[in-house]
Image 1 (tube, rainbow, N blue to C red):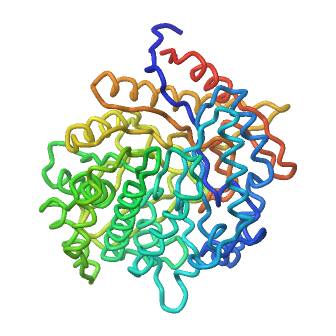
Image 2 (cartoon, rainbow, N blue to C red; image 1 turned 45 degrees about the vertical axis):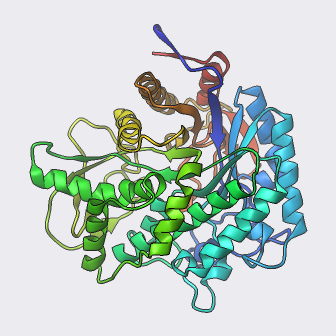
Image 3 (spheres, helix red, strand yellow; image 1 turned 60 degrees about the horizontal axis):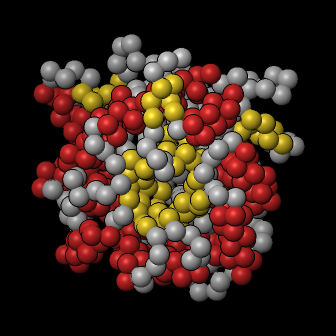
Length: 473
């Protein structure tokens, strides 16, 4: 291997986790319920317990981080572990757990980057007619929860409000394969994203007004959208509409403080096709605008892209949650059909592997939203059916995936994009919301029966990159 490429000084080489996907202990130690608890139990396909048993094994995982050169870790706080009912009574055991976790991280030099809500809004907000963040009182409850965490966990210097608002909307109201979900309700999808962005903005302002030390931002799953035929005006329009759903709606809210006219026009059109209206109030825009100066960073989760072609017809989406390659379908009325471009590889879960898309995405943020301050790649990685043989996992495709994406990150940095870190998804093998345990992402293989950890080949490769700051082409 030749032509080493150098990362900037201070670049964070991290690993990413999420509370519900790693902690286990989902109904113990005073934790309240989340919608996934009963939803997964009713499905009967897989259980989130014990997952990676991070609640008990986190010292082992932080030690692995230290040994393998990983100097940052994304973790999330389970809101219902702090406030079992979403508001009101505090669970001191949950508060103590996170203090212990953050202390272990900081003492090991593995800096915690903490998300307040990673797909696990408490079930309490869906009771008595509540619809989670579609119900506006949940916005205020989230802000109070955030203010509590800012004041309580002052050892945390890097905060994110939410993880992947577009994915939350997609799972809840487009694909409809999440708890309390409905299919093809674009009106509710846009409204959910809007309300969550208002909650984010109000929490950001509260962080600033509280004069807390550190930085705050939001993590979004951003996905480049391309026309299948760049010379087709209809395909370009399909890509534009898909981009509004996945990217522009939340990026406009974050960095414009309002929705550009063509963004709002597209969202309104799709809401009308779904039979609904959007409720975007003047006070909402005021909240988004007030937060503009205080969005310190943007977390970008990115795995794949989407190629769109124009097509007429009815909604038809099938989520590939089994790894049965070729079984996914994505056709959305008013948008078009997702396709695979010839010569572009895909994973067993039909995720398109197109590393150059990350470069396009980062340059697009820099050019379209020049008031952004910094970006972290907060998730990037490859789901793979790892083969465990004689205590070793040769995951060469994952290494190749990471190498290519990191090379495009460096190219974006050379192009003037301020990228301060990269967090591989995932640190260790974890429970997956819709795939269970057969889709593995981790640097560290977990035998879920024994909870023993085994470094994969990718862990050793990542260790070399992290410790040298060099990427070999």
